[in-house]
Length: 429
Image 1 (cartoon, rainbow, N blue to C red):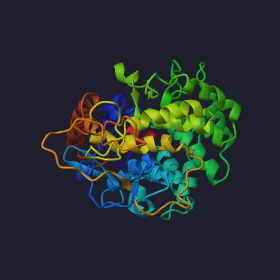
Image 2: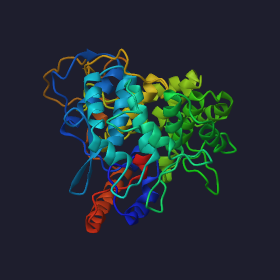
Image 3: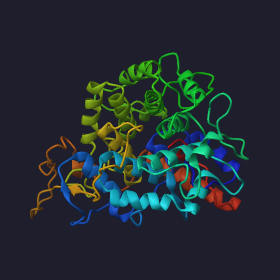
Image 4: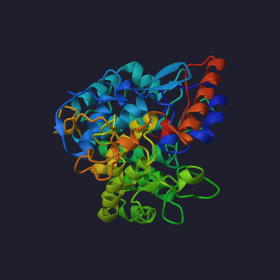
């Protein structure tokens, strides 16, 4: 979801690239120095993959409270990515010291206002919904958060059709399946989601049973991430029959390696597994009762986890390629959701542990020859290939291409003299 938005011309120029829901289509998120190395005394040790992932994620937070996005020479606080991490920590049941700091930062009036609105008075449905969900997961009241009624702000953006839409001075509306699904979940958790909103979401299903990312397309094309979100929302609202076809379609998209592709991406990246899509799919399938498929997805995710031989121990890589720090934060956040299998409707901080754990790794041994074996990979991290995944700190392939694109976008934003950056990806997440 957007934190800062620039002129409409920039949003239009980038929309074709930023609409894809996988991590490679995210803005260039800065990788903190801690993403490249872990402190030796970072926290209590754990042998559980999901706790190790959450501990690594918590230690990447800037000042222990937020994430930031770098575009060209500018750095912006990133509320959307911070919320992703907050929900992941709540689901994993650890690092609540950091979660509390993140919530306190999100509660600041200036943080809220820069997220749900802008200088032109625009209102963003996805931002209201996502922030409300995070507040609910933390056991707080979204109707009075930082002096803002997030529930009223969200419901005011519901159209007669039941769809939640943005109110902007721009020609573009950034809402889609993600914003609709998150809105339904948040409102259901707060009380009851409007029937029209649930019916609109259910009615958006494609003929094959899956759900599209964008509404009102000439050709309805089901997409993995969007279907995972819609399934969870419909199940949260008690629409089991409406969710059933989506669960079946999603199960049928699992690849031989156990992972799921983001078929919204161009080229072969749309046909190969990645942590983000797999995490969301595993979460939805677990909630939908397909434990058999979810178990295989979890096995795939643990193979992407950086083991003891890697610099970013505990992090979950985007895919089976070289470790990509620029993608690792969101990949880890969404993978955690799949590893736990806790639905968005049930994620809660209640009873969670305060500290951010680290993987219980054996003491390093002195050697004169570099080791390329997997002998340092801990039990439970089968096939994680830690040193292979962490061999490089530079994103490759499409990630590098996207970084170049976003640098150009940053330059354009500066020439327009604006401080506000529009990003469809952040709006949907």
